[in-house]
Length: 161
Image (tube, rainbow, N blue to C red; front, side, top):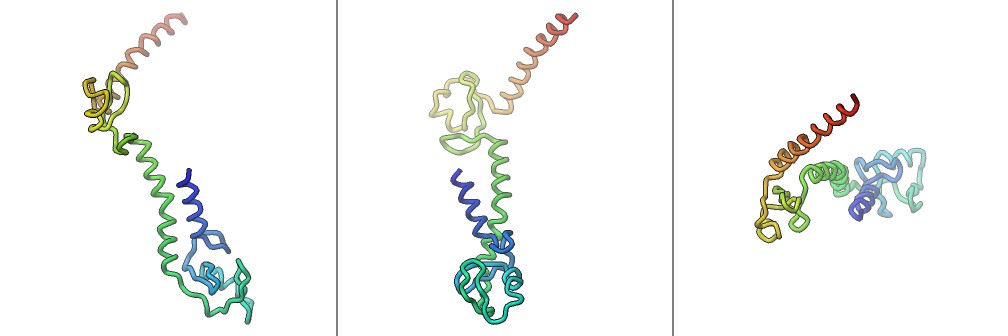
């Protein structure tokens, strides 16, 4: 949950306080606040001498705006984070990880009915148990389930008649 909070805070920092989207062509005012160049220019469009910061109302000079290339690059990275997180989350959902080693689980212990990382079999209680690759164990157990379900279906159909 802390990651999600940190990500939300980072996304907020990379957002323009005027239009609330990600900063585009970010500039920094003398008072240190960041805005999209077009947003701050539009905000100050009809003003002549005094340009108040939309956040702190500090008086800025129009020519004080500095392009912030570092913020521009950071914003690009922040925009990619949610997509990268979704991709990583999908991968984690697809491939279970060993809680101890954070590596992909590849074996199934038939006796204890648990998934193992290949090196865990040496140090675990399962070292003398029958172990199968996950895909093979899944196929075998699907066949077993079908063999149990089919007679049940037949009994139900017979009972209906």
